[in-house]
Length: 157
Image (tube, rainbow, N blue to C red; front, side, top):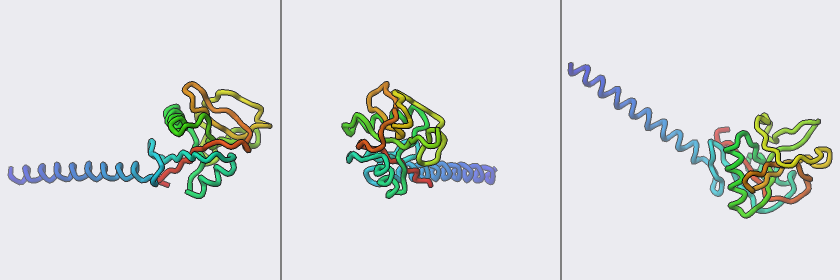
């Protein structure tokens, strides 16, 4: 009976240690962002307030090992809208671009979610910008226009 009690106590202690270790590992995952970056659902985001062209914005993000943000859900889109709005911006570049008759994300991820507001001629406007106003979607725009922009990095990569 004493052996059973010791076994159960040890099992509970180990289970508690596993939960604590999992909590620490989860905390590390979500607090792994660089200073100035904001964590959301396992990724780190940076609002860059200095307006620039889409290509220069992507180069800036790449200098951190990041890309312009790709959007894969309404929650992610609304989070990015809030970041833009909190920064005082009406519009901002995200990582979508038009190439070979298709819209793509710069980070190579699948375009599995869309939130189109205004659709302009992709032969003229080949980069995606998002609107910070609630209820507005993203739209294609001239890539040389200077907007604030949103970088995204996955710290687990």
